Length: 196
Length: 145
Image: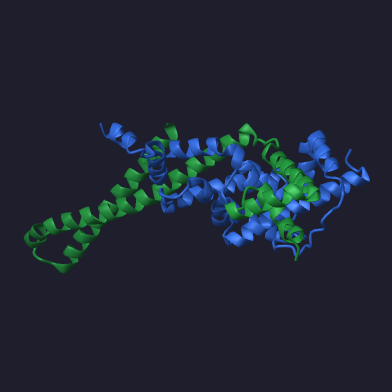
């Protein structure tokens, strides 16, 4: 009866129920969440730190933090952004401790290549995954994060802002510049024939 | 600034699907007339599609199992801590209630203050010991599950 009424009002019964179970620190609900988010969370962490051992540690650390703070999770908000925000904090702490990894927004002027975009398109088509993965790894951390959250996680700009604790304009700028830098790097390498 | 210069920075935002309707219209109108920007937009759109379709690195099954076990242990540890505090308070409360009932006994034993202190202390200690025993038993029971 209650269930039918809830469906009639288009109420997210399952999510609310699951959120309530998580807030009650139900071990089964948390174990299920670990399994369900394993690909997305691990991919995000690996893109950020591009070191499998570090990504493994951060994966566990994120879930331990989540288990400890689950009572603070507000079920009206997205669990995705709440979880990814914890992962973001853990990853940023690690990257801050690493030498040579800047977390600032780079002040890069984008060179508008007059080169044939056909070459770029062909490169993307031919060796898309390998090229993109390698070029993604060479981008500054803030760009890597913005691109992976936008394109791999499919998050809205507001959700990315919530995860990264950055203003909307900054997130937009990071996605734009990240995409431009990626295009610029791929175009430059494709011209040199380094990759193919 | 020409329309070409002002529209170029919007190309990446358009490829990322982050432009509002007005910005999107400006881009569409410009790329209809500018072959260079049209090609740039096509390249950026292909790049965006490529990023969305990159293969997802999977964590090992051991990592997932280890994480689930550690999360379960962490939750059990927190539950133990909370139930330990609750039991300690409950034990003290029970001890106090029992000690109130000992007024009569104390009176019957002559009303010596030393006896009263001993009776009160014994009651609270018994309560705390009972709470510790219950907590320990719960932990042992959980380890056998």
